[in-house]
Image (tube, rainbow, N blue to C red; front, top):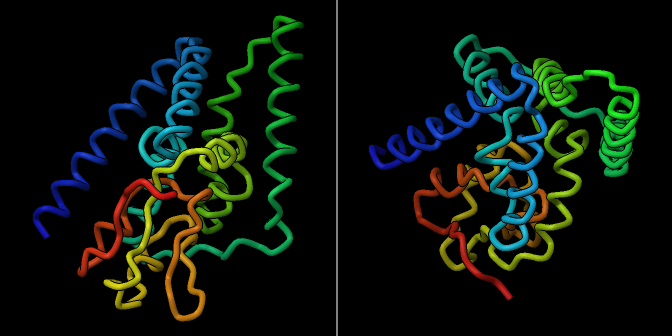
Length: 212
């Protein structure tokens, strides 16, 4: 348990530091530097997975803070509406984002678009399960889900050890741990690489490793 708390402490500390950097860049008009950080995260995902989502993304950080408050107050959110469960939706949002950035730059309009997205993600998380943002609305997630298909480093469930207790399914923020033929598996292209599933597994059946 102490090991789990220590890992979560350092994980949260890293996220907090990166979030402070994002806020500084956003309010000093240097958001183009954050796009550079995202580009690095995109390259990293080709080799090691979507660590940007689980460790760097400022929207994920504020959603985690909201979740902590909701847990303390025992507040609930709605499940993702079926009408919004369409993977093309985030591609549409990505195109809209790119067009907006091009138009604002050409017309010398100062729009803090990344900060607006942070606020939008936070607002959605107030009412709906966080998978709505991670899986269906986030335009960055659309790109990262593509690059993650290329990398061969995955979080996997060792079936011979797994007791199918369901703890990993309950803790997964993106609801991508599924059951097929009485065996649990991870839908890796949508994995945030937050390692919460690995932390709660009492039999150490979840590992991050190279797969063919």
